[in-house]
Length: 104
Image 1: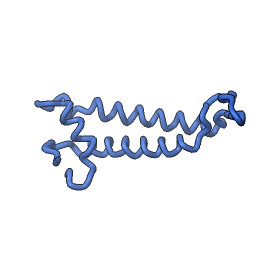
Image 2: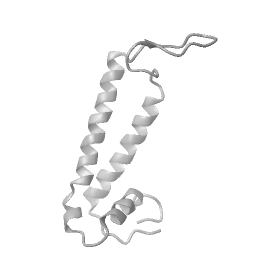
Image 3: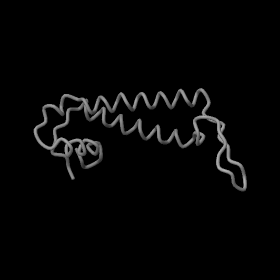
Image 4: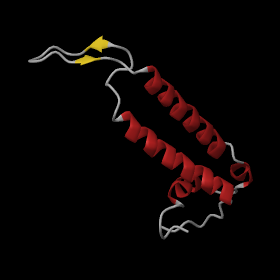
């Protein structure tokens, strides 16, 4: 469904950066041990264990989380929302898809 909203370019850019950062974080998270702290797992045929995150991994996770918070705040507090007359929830949902082909 095409957007009928005239989102400012900086808001569209921030939303797209949020999408891309979240996707990169999720991809990175798949490479991490299952536990941030070293600890044993469930007992079974073989003992599972997590060595925990390395210092570099923990730093990278924090960097991703900080950037996600910053971008989320940028999108959520953009002046466009205060000036919008109409259904803000519907507009926010449209913004999430504004970067998709056919939505421009």
